[in-house]
Length: 283
Image (cartoon, rainbow, N blue to C red; front, side, top):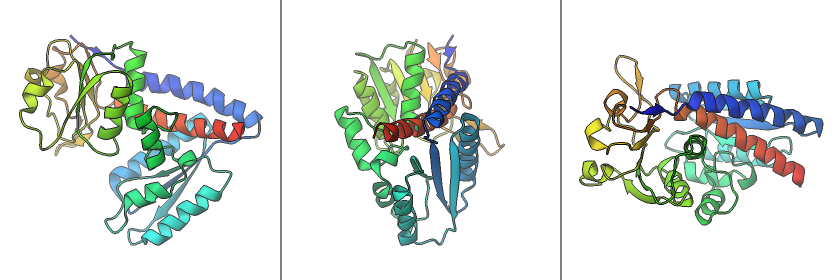
């Protein structure tokens, strides 16, 4: 029977600690502030932005959002990012994805100043993660690492499988596990014999966006299973990429959906904003 990795509780503890750090920064005249940009009216994005706003308010981080119509030009978006880069009162800039097809999201990420890139998507931060330098780490993979550390789950020398190779989760997750000295295998939509590969893993990290994809017969006894997926079924129920009921009896540790990785993603975003504010103080 698996032990549940409680991301909700850990995120709560992290936010409590961050709140104290924010109060200390304010005594020194630094008021941590996050600017979130959203283009279009994607329903899921609206929910995420609302959650981020609420978490910032609870932690004492100033929050502002820039909502743009779907028809907003790339030029206008980049101009806004540039203005936020130059605004000394803003410590973190986040561009909510997805964006409309006529906007090159990678170009937008490149425009965000690396020192304000609290989502960790600017190539400077991506590169620094790869070479093991201090940087802003993409929030979801960072949250997964914090969970593994909190529960003292051994990563060194372990076989870790990352399912998914997105720029937002999969690729930085691979690098984070390499930095934790795991032996990492990546599976994606073109991988053959996924079942056989996953069965070898000590740690399975699923981030492929396929509801209930990982079944109990796909994992080995005692594997650690991290579910990054968030999928809404036709009946409205939210499930992960892992069939929780099926996998639970066989795993040693497992994250629930919701309440596992999700809250940790938001906590790591707040942590990155506080880090950016502290970096500003050092300057």
